[in-house]
Image (cartoon, rainbow, N blue to C red; front, top):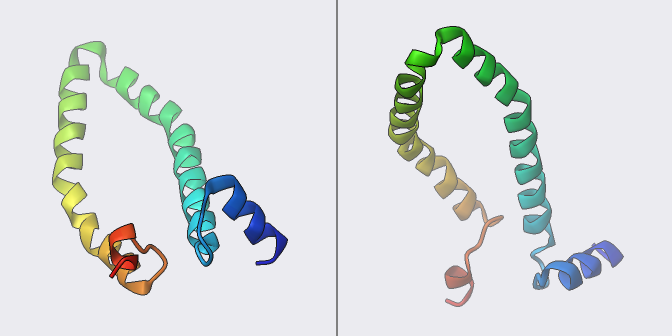
Length: 94
């Protein structure tokens, strides 16, 4: 990566070869926040149209749906780890 890689290592304390993971993490986090800030007004408008009395049920339902769907994303995270782009510190010490 040349100078850019050296800059990433100096700025974030990354080791040699971790530049790609740092850039992927930055890009993922940036897109995640962009999508959140784009969808937040839509979510608020939908909640307001449902009425203030239904807000506790909307929040509870959202929480329960996310609680049920979160374990479904675990297999996709395992695939990233085995692809070698997201090595943990314990995996690199073996």
